[in-house]
Image (tube, rainbow, N blue to C red; front, top):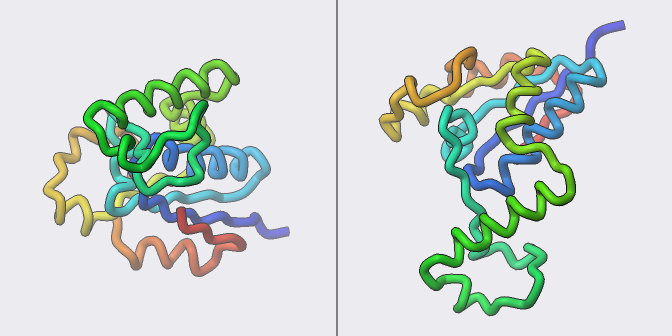
Length: 155
């Protein structure tokens, strides 16, 4: 029996969008899938040693809030920080692992973490800011793996 493969493209760099790739990858790995996450554009934020991720309430009408907040108020200074704090508190109160913990689970489970070299070059990222053990590659690197994967997700 051949090993199943899961390929994920992570393109978002906010706190709420950090969870899906790491939860899905760590779960798939635990289920025996050979798993890879390809981080591109804003998704590269998820590979930084120092995670300063925030929730962006703007343009996110599905975000459940304790009380309805009009879009205009969401644009006020400090709202993003307040929403981030609320989200972190909610996650902690429900026993949800932090992004750092989920990312470490992926590293321990040998999920292949690939940073898009073109995006690293484009935004002039200093690779010293990224966690150890990641790989660098381009679209061809992703397609080598994704072309043989059973499941491919764009997040």
